Length: 172
Image (tube, rainbow, N blue to C red; front, side):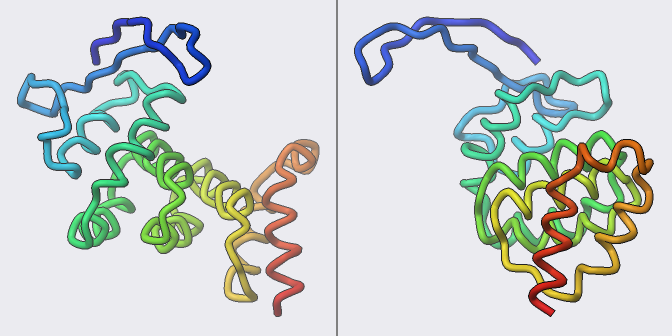
């Protein structure tokens, strides 16, 4: 991942410092661009290891740039492969899915509630609550299980999961 910076005008006429990010596609050594197929760009940004650069800016770029270009076959491909990926990859992907605010991302977020990675499950619940997605009794058990895996002393820090559970209980 290469990072550089540039100044650009923002709507109020002032200049803002922006970070320019380009991802190197796995095994290709070429930067991702708008010409890169979106699924390949996603793979490039998520990286092949935990050491691969990941920031909130990159997450938002993936959510609002890459995932917005996804077509039905890309969503299906992602649904089929996400659970088999390493924890860091699932976490990054889940975070980007929650930020993209696309209806196509919702089934993936719901499936991530059942991930083998606790942090991915927590991120999925957080984003579903933040997006105010309608939930019902079908998620009550999994949300209770997620909360039960969080140490009691730390549960207050996870209000979004508790709120999502409350909404699911109220809907049932």
